[in-house]
Image (cartoon, rainbow, N blue to C red; front, side, top):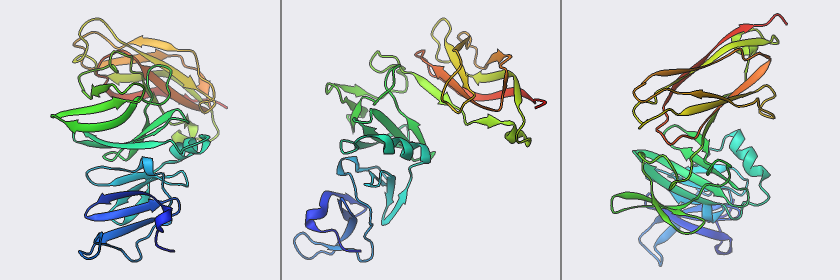
Length: 294
């Protein structure tokens, strides 16, 4: 390993009293020695053989995040660099024809810390929650694609974001359930379910019913909202027709949405989609299933 050369440096950032110089091959941390101009010396044996995309470097209250040249996502904690991209995220990033225009944004909201990683060429945005360590595909509108957020600032006591399309400034607000009037589509896909989860590998499964428990009452002003359910028996390659169901009226603080006679399968994924402008709270889900004879 060698120290990052000046002609290798693409980005410089500071974190926890250290300075980091990152290039297309490596990252070199420096410490404030108090001598020289600038007064920083390399931290020995701390170089990381990971190249960076400088526009993706973003710092939160506790960490620095970045996209590596190997198309993995990393979290810097002091002098410790760890990969945080899961297989689904890394696989998606590997399919983009270019990631050179990717950018990263850190923000804190309601005591939660997030890292947003957006890909203009890939037309996709990923959001990492430091509190849950989970990734979310953050799409815009009902057609999906890259989200509109391009930057974030907390100023005048407000969480402000800029619109990548036109430079408009919006306020993040938990009590607003649209994107400046545009529909927000919320989607949740389950993992693949099979008889193996019941300890009977290789058997088919019959789904008699599916139940979703939702708490809608506090946010519905009037009328009723709906949830759309689909299922896939080929690992997400194709999906069933949309099955719509009401989630109840205002004041129904615990409402059970049910679908019946959902057929036989060997592997199944469930998808729930919600577009009504309310505060969606999914409490849980369960299915009534039985093992088939084959």
